Amino acid sequence: MSMSVGSSLGARSYGGGNSSNVFGLNSGSQTEFSISIGNAAANGFADAVVKNVTSAGMLAARQGATRVKKLVADKLSQSDKQVGSLGDQVTFSGALTGLVDFGAAGPSASGGFQFKSGSALQDAFSLAAPGITSHGEAVDKVMVSGNTLTAGTSGKDAHDVFTLSLRPDSGLWTFTLVNPVDQLSNKSYQFRLLNLTGLMQGVKSDGATDALSGSVTIRINNDLGRATGKGNEGVVHQAGLTYSAPSTAAASGPKKYTPPINPLTGRGYAAASMATSSTLNILA
Image (cartoon, rainbow, N blue to C red; front, top):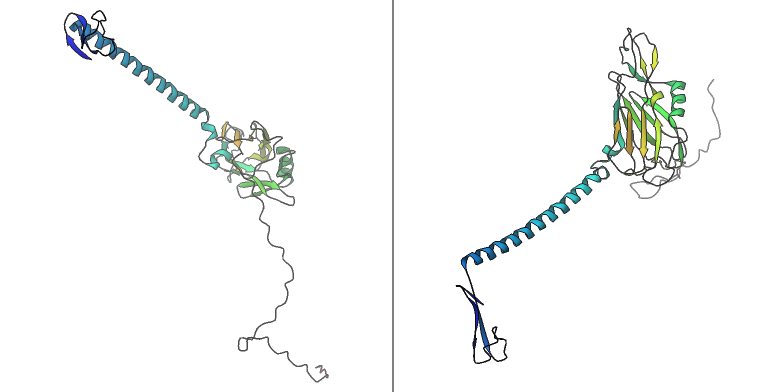
C-alpha cells in the first residue's frame, strides 16, 4: 500500500480484468491500492491514532497503579503479621508513673516502685495467672532476683514462662514472654489474660507501701504480630515462640569401677599379697 497526498481516492488494475471492480479483487489481476488524502485529513488521522495510543497507555498505567496500590494495601494490612524480630512480638514495656501517690513523704530512697515479697507476692501471683498453663503444666512458680521477677511451672518439666523487670526509680517495667501459654483452642484470635497489678507496689520514704491505683495487664494472643498496647495494657503475640523444654542433666549414679592400667606393662596392676601377720598392735 502506498500513500500520496492528493484529492482523489481510487485504484488501478493491471493485467486486464473488469475495471468496474474498483479494488481489483479479480483473480489473476495484480492490484495496487492508492489512497490519496489531504493534509488536514492526514493530520486528523494521526491525531486520532495518537489519542488512541495515549488513552490506551494511560488506561494501562492507571490499571498498573491500581494493582500496585492494592499490593501495597495488602502488604500494610499484613504488616503486623510480618515482624522482623521475635522480641518485637513477645516484649511489651509500660510505666507505673501516676499509679502511686507518694504524698508528702515521697518515694523511698532505694526506689519508689518495688515487687512484693514473701507470702504477699505468692498470694498476688495466684491471682495474676489463675488456671493458666504452659505445655500442660500450671504456671504456679514465682521468684524475684534483683529487679526481675520470673514466673514459670514447677512440674516435671519445670520451665520459665515469662519475666517482668521493674526499675525502682522510674517505675518503667518490661514484660517478656519466654514460653508460650496454653490457649483454649488453636485459633488465632484466642488470648489469655495476665493481671500483673498486684505483683508491684509503691514504697514511700517512711517504709509505708501503697497499692497501685490502676491496672497492669498483658493479653497473650495466639497469633503473630508486633506487640502493641495502650498505657499499661499490653498485647503480645506468641505464635513465633517455640516451647523450650528444660534441660535435664543425665541421671547420676554409682559408676562401674574400672581397674587402673599399668603404663609400663599395659596390663592391670598385680594384686598386693595379703599381710601374713594377724597380730594387731594397739598403742596405749
